Image 1: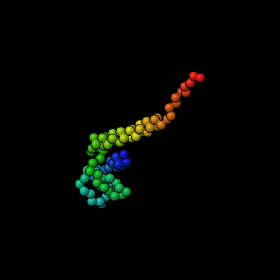
Image 2: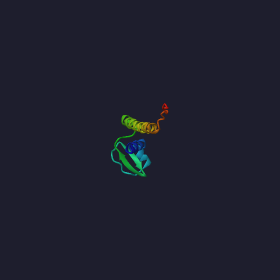
Image 3: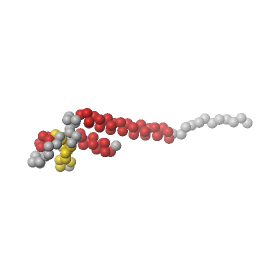
Image 4: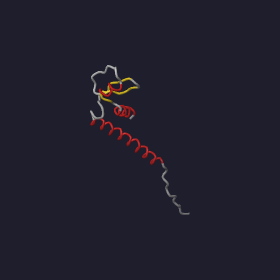
Length: 94
C-alpha cells in the first residue's frame, strides 16, 4: 500500500514541462511529459500530469481506495471476531 500511496501523491504534484521551466529557470530539461519537484531538484515523471493521463490516475486512486477499504473492513472483522460470545448458562436438574 505504501508504494501505491507514494506513486499517487507524487502524481498529484506532477507539473508539465512548461510549468517546470517557469518554476526552475535555467535548468536543462529532457523531453519528458511531466516533472516532479524533488526537494528543489526536478525529476522526470513519465506518467504525465493528472490532466494528461486522467484514466491512469483514476485507476491508481481506485486501487488506493480499495486497499484502504479492505484494510479498514478487515480491522473491523477481526475486532468483531475477537469479542467473546456470551452463552447463557444452563441449569442442570438436581
